[in-house]
Image (cartoon, rainbow, N blue to C red; front, side, top):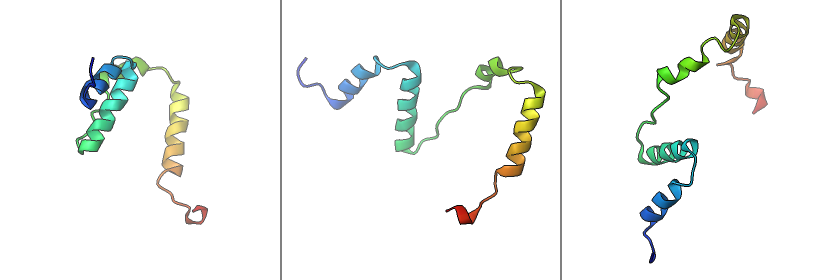
Length: 76
């Protein structure tokens, strides 16, 4: 093939990436274009239901509520 265009070269190389890597590239392109990045559909997250014990989730929730949103200006 003679000197492929940049777009053709990108497309050829995309096939060599994993689906996760391809999604990362898509998100980068959307970001460059100022377009919203689509998240993961909720039904894909259902496989994680019940993965963590309720006690662990409560501990995580408590840590987020206590520590997030607080800025220690002396650290910077």
